[in-house]
Image (tube, rainbow, N blue to C red; front, top):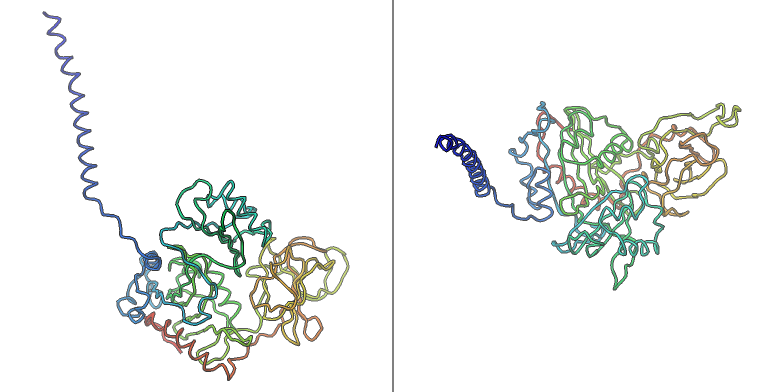
Length: 486
């Protein structure tokens, strides 16, 4: 009897933890149930442009341009950046507008598939092959082999380069093999891409084509700190930075150095796939405002080889030649007499050497026509561009030429013509940049620092119509607090 009485307390003690555990479980279940009941419903789907605007912090309709410059929108502050007086105090403002109508309004000929298709995008990394890039899109096995075979019929797949973008569109979201590949585009950093599409039981490749929809967008962005920091704060990606920096520092006759408190306005043509910008295609207009002045550059695509940036009156604001053939580089050897680093003799150096990493893009400093792109002994891989009857430029020791270069074809100012290397008689990767005036070598730093000719008389009417549209988009962004234009 005593033994039974002694066991009863232990029996009750064993039951108590079970009751406590049950209470905890019940509380968790009730909490989860309440969370599910009170959670917000899934957002309704939006079209591509609405989703793009929502991601960038604006919800302006594509046709409501008049509403963009309202005092309410101009007064909105950017919570991601510090509050400053003047132009930088205004948050980023965007206007999405349809591209101009006409046969030249869509130079990329984009294609848009059904909205239920799945898109994937990959940027090729250094040293990656086309096969490895396709794997990132989940294209493997027999589908990968068939795509590469089709690609080989048009281009050499071993020539794919870092920075290129590979875009795939699929009928389903499946990750096995190709997920029913509908279209694949391999796009270089400039120029058209190559499109691979199914045809029957195989794939065929053709030149041209880029993914997505081309849209025109105006942006108002206050400068706070560096240009790169400012554009990122205003919702743009790093791919836009070199385009704007080159325009401000290299193309304009009067270079601009961004400073905190200034304001930058852009009209850009973007290629967009769903919610993701695929590429910045072009800067159609730029307006840079300080407390003292306003500089406006409007792009005019002429039919007579005078395309460029002009002010609202049609006078060119663009230099005849860029200031240098690379975006960033250090000068390692100047024009004139020097001790040759290989021959160890004092010889004339007919150019300027720029040290830069192997593979750095090299661009033509001016408009012209390609004379040659060939191997040339001690000069290594050499490109020559003739700009007019007076000037010619040379680019030596290139690692490789840009694809598609053909003698006699027109070369645009800023067009990539090759990549820094160390071919020929060279001690390391660099670019030798030379210039001739009327057949005689000159210091490339002495290329004329003058503006291009203005809009011709016969194109004044066309320029006025196109510039009116660009100026309207810039004005629709509203007034700038604390800034006055001239």
